[in-house]
Image 1 (cartoon, rainbow, N blue to C red):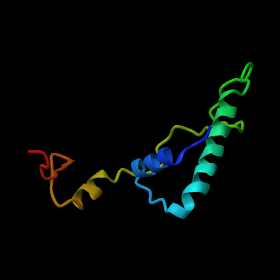
Image 2 (tube, rainbow, N blue to C red):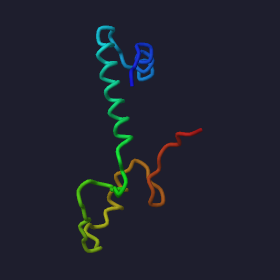
Image 3 (tube, rainbow, N blue to C red):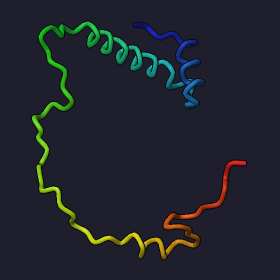
Image 4 (spheres, one colour):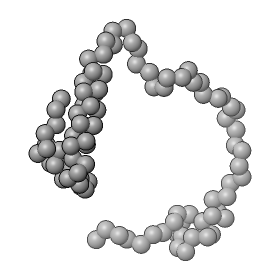
Length: 95
């Protein structure tokens, strides 16, 4: 796909990126190459390829479902500038 100067200028403006005139030609070539590569990837044969979340086989580490920390809720609540009924009180921000 070929990117012309007007399209490149519009993309740069929408992305709020400064595009010096001396870099415009090379940037257009680079962007065209990236779009061509994306087109090639879009046409890649995917028959028989299973979707995956990660390229490496990963398993979760299982552990016992047990409490590992002490209950510090009251100590942390005591640090708050304002607390009511066991909850942190914050100023109203929406009118």
